[in-house]
Image 1 (cartoon, rainbow over the protein chains, first blue to last red):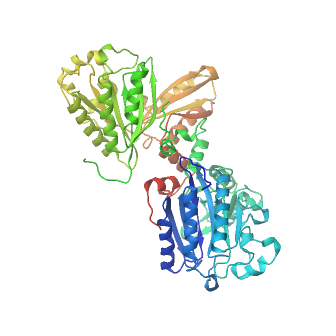
Image 2: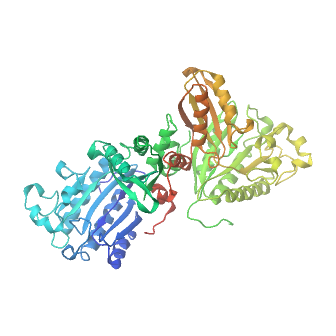
Length: 310
Length: 310
């Protein structure tokens, strides 16, 4: 084991598996995670039209690596991409495995964990593996979309080009399991801001103003959508790095842009899980908190295990 | 044991002991807490002029009761109020013991824990015990100040009046240990708001506007003070129930009142520990979060131990 001994690191791992229809297969994979000591399954969901399942695990580095290897081992005999169809792009049976730093662990450590796991997946199962996001050594492989372009069906042709030699494993696709993409990234927050209007163009204009691709914040993806059942519109946002582009800044920017059109923010919503740090940072901002440290949060002190007095 | 089996309740307990000068005595008491399984010592501090120490422990009900009983047992031979002096009012060797609900536990359960502990302290050590705050059956005993008025030196005379018959234990003071006050209350947040002015009257006027005693918020105590070294003034606040009088409401009220005098809020600060819920509630407010539940906080899911998938 190369892992350092530390009190308790919290790393999230979110494997995406190319099976979302056969319940028995999904149940088997879920059980493999539940049976791995030191790993907790926080959540999982399957989408039949995507034919894809997303599992959310959490734990320290060593147990997570064991869980991911066990997941590959269980999935390989059960998931064959030659017989797979679904709306969501994919190149592998275990398609994507990101490691996400949550607490008491650096991004560098998650990158090291991703590389270690990728090397072991390639060695044990003879699967080509690409490193992505913060784990990518090659800038052309940072974006998942670029690696996955062409999908499983186009993978053999794609890999014949030297620039698509995998980071680990054989230079050709695994016959049934394709290739896998393993990496490290910041936690992603799915964050929507609902506007008190039914004018879709307002939501679209604001989305364009705040998203990276059109000149907005670096770690924001956004689009304007209509919530037909409620008669309002929404700026639907993915925050890909809440430390560098925090929630409160995006909220205030949307509020400011909306006011330009005489529109107010009705409410915002977080879809799924959010790290406590994102909410604490928001409170710090709006309360103008000075010299506040996370050590002052009672529950934080509990987890970090400091029994020393003052 | 009458305690229900639950996944994990977090109760804070903050015993105040009438000894803040003899380091060896304080060390002995601290060690007693550290040696109690299931209880964590989060913090302790001693004040020589007050001649008083405050310990902050956390744990579930049964371990906390054991820790408090062990603390009484260790303190009784070491702390004699007949030879005690200090600036802070006190009636007992172990003067006050509040239990505070933090997570996964109701106030009613903390009240039950306070009563159970009070009865056991009285039975084992023959000490009169008064119940206070949320644990008080008698409204005249809700406020600690009322129970403690007259202090140790006036206790025998006070207890001769029928309205000061203790809730548990003998009708006269313990010779060396006086009486103890045990109860349950909400977590107290020490919260200061600094104003961008040196006009003390502005801080004093705002403090009067927001505090309960002069017509302000029900769970706010406040005073205006000068921070001479920084050339500014501060509204120094105790929030005695952050659920019913939340931080963001007090912050916004102070900001609004200050604007009346052409003054802005420079910053605010939290002194000591704060429950995560107070910060999360603040983020919910300012982000106008709709249908958010604490289950969505990643770290919360970890502690509550839900392994079920969706």
